[in-house]
Image (tube, rainbow, N blue to C red):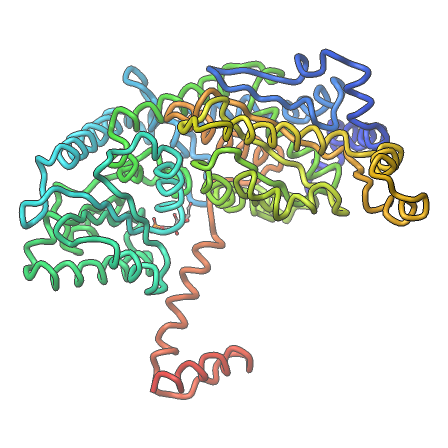
Length: 547
Ligand code: G6Q
């Protein structure tokens, strides 16, 4: 059994929690007008306000003791220097190397990987410049206007999120599409919206064996050949991104259009690699490199800032505080920026696939909670949906609010209204509404004492609900890079404290295995009897329908 929950830092936090949980943030803010200065950090135009948390300076210091006890500084160095910290797959974890500017050297198995990283970036630049300028055209000589990414999970969610987030920087004559699901409706609906003569398909798959991606790629290939009347058209309309160059060539993709990456890039950490090709095509290579630069700035901060001033460390330790000492199981990501609409779904994979683990680095089942369920929607849509639960539900849901100070679309009062909602929500979650305040409010509405007494319980808000606010100038490529890297490293910090491997994904591999095992049975002519009676019946119902 792990010693974590019996360690001095853990025990100190447990007893401290019993004191803090009797306090309210309302009192804490009243007692200390410098709370915002004490509990906020800035980096390159990004403000991280974590003052609306159930913490005191002592809490923070105890949380940082726990981080220190877990050896966080040494783990950060292990990550950045290419140690094989993904032990169950015997791999280094070097998405950080992908955003290094020239002049760095990072060794994997005795080889400096940086020349390869920059060679592939140059390849992406040449390709994207050619496509965007119209120098590289489709089979019939027309300019490419549609880019369709065919990939799933880590080979889709990052590019999808980033293309949406950076839409204001996109080429006006390009549309980005994403096909992931093996459900034919996904590709069918996309094919209806594109023109074969002006479409570039990018088949993105680290392994190039993923069932969904290969099925969609085959369908796209057949559609293209059918419409353009020649197999030769594939060379000008297909590119691939993979670590499996043998499989891409077998699929028939022109080797010049194949972009390589390496096993030390995890799928969900891969948007910085050639998996980001759709982003580079959509917003241009200079903007893609600004995205990398923003992430690199966050990496440098993470690696060098003292723990007390380290954004990913503090964000991560606040999660540990609520997850392990308040029993919180989920938290919400609430972007007040429409362009960040896919950010919660992106973080859902990043966090849940990384830290959804029950066995520690020594192979022992843990006796403490790891991971959170991550969810969210852009504000203000969420306010008219699930905020009810956050304000008045029985369980505490910590929240991260993200908002830009200025909008890409400064129309009328929209942005002021948007931010007034954002700030009002964080304040209300913290303050709540007491019985006295609710009663006074009802009185001003002219209600009778009897009506007030009946309504009062419903009108009270407990408050004391924690939130972080991440405020930035504008959602530009550099800022987006910083934000993504902030969350990547925050997840890493938590995995270090929990002593789990954030970089493998055996649950995903399990799913891939299951899908290929059952497929022949669905296609079989024989009655299937080898499973439990529920699964047998489901399979046989489908088989009977197919006849
Ligand atoms: C990410 C996961 C997973 C993976 C997909 C696609 O970290 O490993 O989401 O990205 O299963 O895999 P391929 O890129 O190999 O097709």
